[in-house]
Each structure stands twice: as structure tokens, then as C-alpha cells.
Image (cartoon, rainbow, N blue to C red; front, side, top):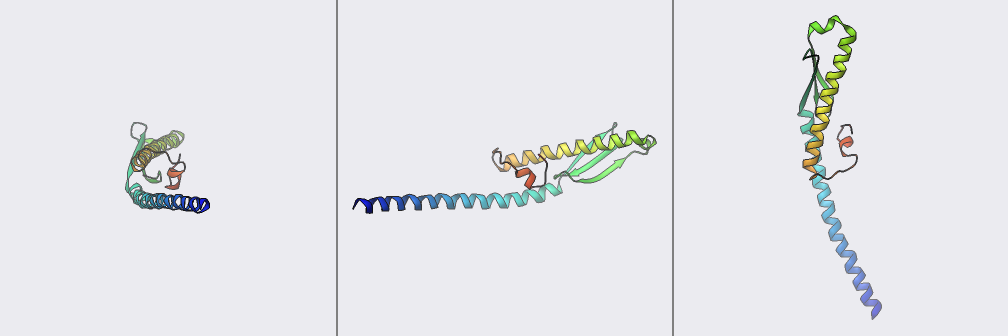
Length: 125
């Protein structure tokens, strides 16, 4: 009789755990759907960085991919300076993009840090 009770108890514990697992799987599925929407939104977002008093302006999408660059013709007279300005403008825009992604992920995950999530979405760390 005792072994029957133990078996019944262990069975209830196992089945109760399956209910929790179903809830976790449902939450994971919802998170996956939200992440897919977020990826689309990130591609549509634009972040701009400027350097040299606005002589060089770079625009990246929400994933940090360069989508546009504008260069004032006055900046072209010094090639070395122009190269530095381009790097600075692209870097500033990419930083804004990463900050935007972090904010969006924080909202989506309720502030919970999930390692590798931003890389999975195409952003840097």
C-alpha cells in the first residue's frame, strides 16, 4: 500500500510539473512572436550620428546596419579627416541603435537580461 501511495504522489508531482512546463512553453512561444515583431520594427527604425559639426551624417537601422551617409563637399578636401569623420559618424549612429535595441529588449523582457538575445536579433553587445 505504501508503494502505491508513493507512486501516486510521484505521479501527481510529475504531472503538476508538466502543467508548469506547458506555461513556460506558452510564454516562450509568445516571446518568440514578440521578438519577430521587434526584428521588423528594428529594421524600420533609423538612428543618425553626425561628426565634424554635421559635415558627415550617417544613418543606421535598428540593427546597426548602415543605410545612408551624407557628406558635405567641404569635408572632401582633407581625405584623412574625412575618413575619421565617417568612422565617428557611423560609430555614433551605431551606438544610438544599440541603445535603442537595449531599451526595446528591456521593455519586451520586463527588464530581464537574457544573454545573447540582442546578438540573436542582429545587434552587437
